[in-house]
View 1 (cartoon, rainbow, N blue to C red):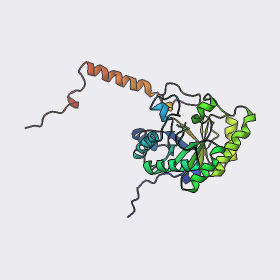
View 2: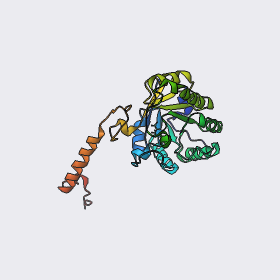
View 3: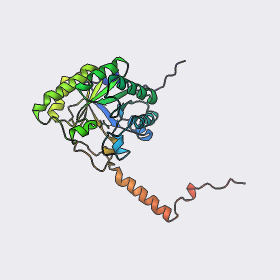
View 4: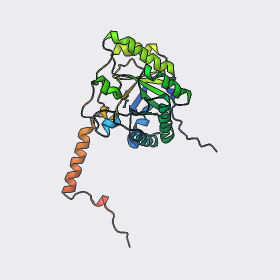
Length: 273
Ligand code: KIV
């Protein structure tokens, strides 16, 4: 007997069909509770490998492992019902060959239940993207600034600010679209280039630091909530949760030290005889 859940999750084809339509809202989440909040408002929840920096205090995404991604992907799937959940393939888990990429992606889909994976790279990943999509793995691509390549790039700098670089980015983006990606994240590129890429390709572009010209936007949740100590120029802080959390912990510590917490309302009395 088949079991159908009442709320149907958005799928990769649903997001693909949004090209040029209502903007796609995407946000990262790594936990069940924040996933439940994001699920009410977002079309796509990204379990990004930025979790290495945000949750674990790493300097870059390079040390993030597949097991870390799967664990948080499972948490986000438990917390959400409606959004398409996309899980990042971490550095070193997919670049060696298209077969390696398929085995990694299959593990992510099977063990998390997510609806798609994301991988970084343009033309060099096109053959892999085609291999995966032909075998039932929906792929979101990621071009422009690709943080997993930080050791080769040298720094997290905006890309495509010189028109002489544009042809390379157009080629990268066209390659992933033609290979079968259902959408592509464009990170930290100059506004006119993002506009041109969005107009050129047939799949939705999801910008992060790539202007409103894109078909959708993504941010790292902790950055937009004001919890990250340093954020790139493209982040707008929609909240300032740091001081609120600081105050709550200050009050808790003071009440524990003064023995005013726990109060009678937080304490179990004996059963009435
Ligand atoms: O890992 C991540 O959070 C990402 C977004 C920045 C797009 O890839």
